[in-house]
Image 1 (cartoon, rainbow, N blue to C red):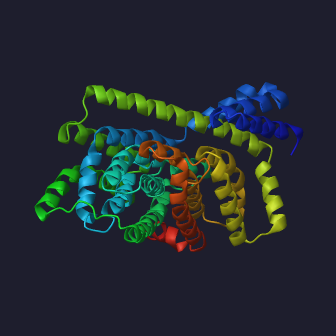
Image 2: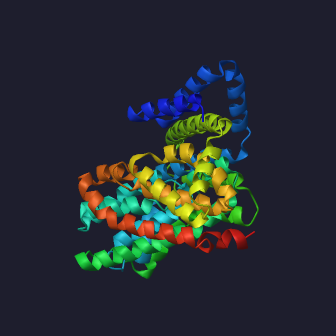
Image 3: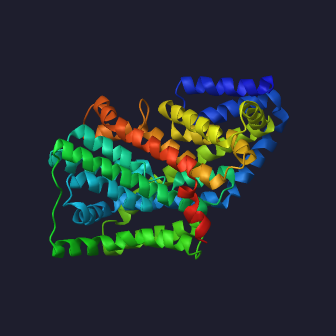
Length: 428
């Protein structure tokens, strides 16, 4: 590596220290590198990067899923979903906490976003749990932990970005995330059951058969969104991008004509919010492509590969080191930074060691979602602490055992690839 690449990383490090947003950090450091080393190629570099970005069909899925998530949050379908899940699990000890986890699994099939889950339906979950006598800190912690299911179980915006970076199949990544997402929900529900008996948390809402039937009918149009989305992808009827468009249109139709919770004014607010979210993602994607172009040109990945292979060529040891490093990065860095800066650097080594890109993608996405709930900078911790109106220290104390369980499950999916690859290998 020459002095130019050292300047690139030095400027980026300074930007991180002064807490500059990741997109601007990558943009400033990349432009500085080009101006210092190849000023005459500035136009050519930007032409290549923007050409690659706008020709990437996979990335069209992201704004569609963002729009669908915002529609679902604004259309108040969460009330119907919450009532349906209460009817299923309300009789259990700690029933509302169990609902908290289960509804995240269902809701993730509509949004694919941990932040959308925690800040949307999470508000209702925490308030209801507090009313029933749950500790505010525990209510907030389980909401943060369950929200991590969103980007693991399909659809998943982080997996779409990973597919763009790696060239892996979006459909196979979605299928690979299904079993780990369900396993995470089961593990958290078992933990909730144990804690509920230990602390004598109450059962949730108990419905009669007639009440449950009514709740199911009201929730059914929303539940069909998941079936349309995943069914379209896995039957081969449409691509993930086309399924996102279809599901978004369906969500808009039921919000307008079935639930009647969205009118022109709310729709305009949803469009503006979706446009802002998409612009943020586009800026992140574009600047990451620029940064990756430079890293590739300077053969940083090859240098890392040589250094790692000089230590070990054992892929299992490599995966352990990657997991440890990414878990530590997740404690101090934002998910987007990890995914857009560090993942492209190690992908050539992943391919060299013969690790399946779909398997690795699910591992990385799972790892990064743990980071969202890991102190000191886990974004979900601050969101749920604000919603629950409790001290973040108390939330951290409650979530540590849950994070430990997530790490154990991360090791399972790392060293037992069949857990991830069963569906991608058997469902065409």
